[in-house]
Length: 278
Length: 253
Ligand SMILES: Nc1ncnc2c1ncn2[C@@H]1O[C@H](COP(=O)(O)OP(=O)(O)OP(=O)(O)O)[C@@H](O)[C@H]1O
Ligand SMILES: [Mg+2]
View 1 (cartoon, chains in turn yellow, purple):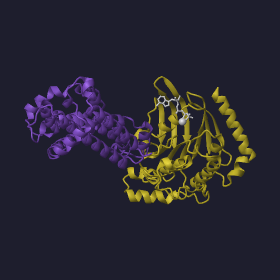
View 2 (cartoon, helix red, strand yellow):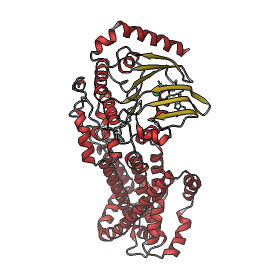
View 3 (cartoon, rainbow over the protein chains, first blue to last red):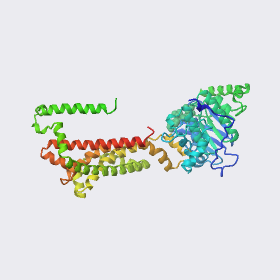
View 4 (tube, each protein chain N blue to C red):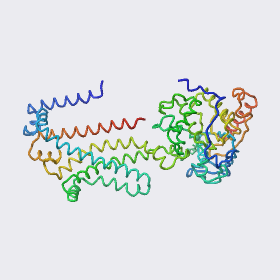
């Protein structure tokens, strides 16, 4: 099944209304993390972490496995409470307010097997009180652009790994939140589809900017998609380097990622990562 | 090979061997019994035919009790599983009691129930519901607790309310477990109904349990076996209906 990679980067405009736009400032919500600490019982996962994500900025998080990246996203989204420090999202810092402003895309796709691809994508809309038909219509509009046309009624178990991830991504977008917390959104994709998805997301964020915190293991992906990339140390996670991407979300991805400036920053990031592992 | 070939073959072989052993008197000799105590399948079959009106009438009585009791047990079981799932305190407090309640022999409480409710349909309904309640509750509760905690986090991030999390994630996860519990429950429900009829029924239209009690006393073994056969058919039929319903409802497995 190859039709699932027929994605068009130019037309990747997002017409997803941001819910809560009434209370959210038109320039979007930023994320401000100060002196953050978190532990699972005895296990200290995050220590004295500082991170500032300006409204509509895209910030990448890279770091060794198990350093607390997923935990950090859950903290930002209001799914966990910190043991020290504060997390502000759009100026609000209570967990319910963070919950209302962030959409979390977990590392595993977690599609619900009892719903079709279309109903999985529209899950947030249904939760927000939209009727079944309206939620389906809204999700169906974006299915083609996600290379999912024709798979609306398909059960998640019958989708390829890449398609499942795209349905999960669409589900996150349709929640219409100002802040997206994406945990390795393209990890399960083959190299080609992955590059296409990155181009697609870059185009989408150009036309419909959102505040994004993106966790990835792929330094190149982080430097192409993000304005800034924060490198985390091994557990307990702290930010040990912050790198500015030379040309975030460039129109021509292939040219951008082979540019000497890009390669230099990538090398720097790899060095920082290696440092952090120790 | 069709799925039913093996079981049918096995039943045929068993019946054939039994027929030979019973008609030659080998079985009776082996166990040192009077031969009329060991009916052959042919005798059971002819008894089944001769008593068809009586058996059908009483099977209908038993079936109604099983269905009504199972229905009550299902409602109560799913209801209490949900309640125990929602309240940690309630679960801690009552779960040991729930398990202990299963150690109480129905034999011990049947007379009390009959004194309480009389010889009518009510004590039977209560006994059947009681035996169905436990497997359904325990299985449904297991299902509700088998929910992936990450799926709940996801629902919360997607603006899911407590009720929506239950309706869209927890209930569908638990459904196959409830079916498993229900399938165990129908089988024991038949035993429960027979026992209840045995303990307190007027003969005539007291159900298969009452007939079994009488035929047991009269050493009417052919008809006894015919009654057991009808009970088995009821149990297999109900089990099959549930399995069918499960396949229609739980389409994602
Ligand atoms: N619910 C939990 N309870 C206890 N410990 C946990 C829990 N979740 C994660 N951990 C531990 O906390 C640490 C950080 O986990 P986390 O999932 O945040 O890492 P990560 O950076 O996302 O790793 P990866 O890159 O492999 O996804 C790990 O050592 C993990 O074993
Ligand atoms: Mg992770």
